[in-house]
Image (cartoon, rainbow, N blue to C red; front, side, top):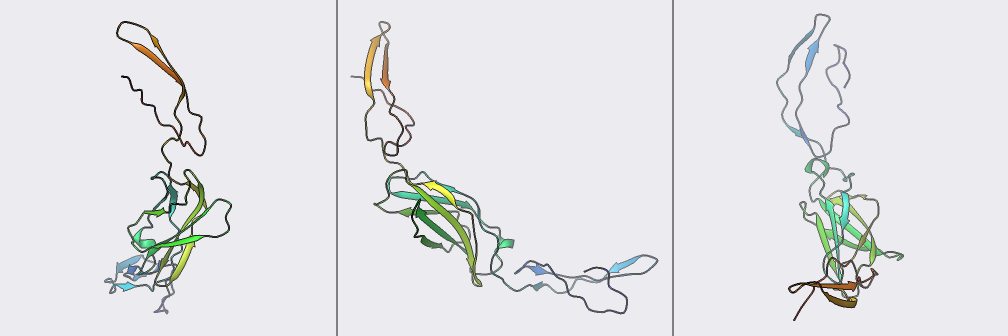
Length: 194
């Protein structure tokens, strides 16, 4: 609080964080200066409240076929605002109106994996991650777009040809596989000889 006049012996301290232990000291002042602070009060914990800070860096993707991997940066302890803290993960296929909701009860968690055989490779999902504690559900993150896991490429490269360049070397070439939802990202090729 601001400076309190000398006839007041009580003050209300505001804008404290919920579920945090505080100790207090009082300092007297006059026109000459500021005196020594009092001894610290006993530790006092503020009451719990619904968490208001959502997880950040919502991401994910990757994983294996039929998986949706969702990741986030955990909320620090001083922003959890109470006991029983955990995460709420909500997701839906892009264009859908129905959200699927999962609860992750571990405070340290930073990942959730949804497995379902009906998920097609590289499907876009809208994802948001929120928080809760014993006081209730808190804030949700903004929506992020995350893609489900890929499948192995379903087609072989076309147009393979070989050209002898020396007694010990052959140059092999092929047409690249074009990217689409069903082939996924081609990260590399393997050339086999027999």
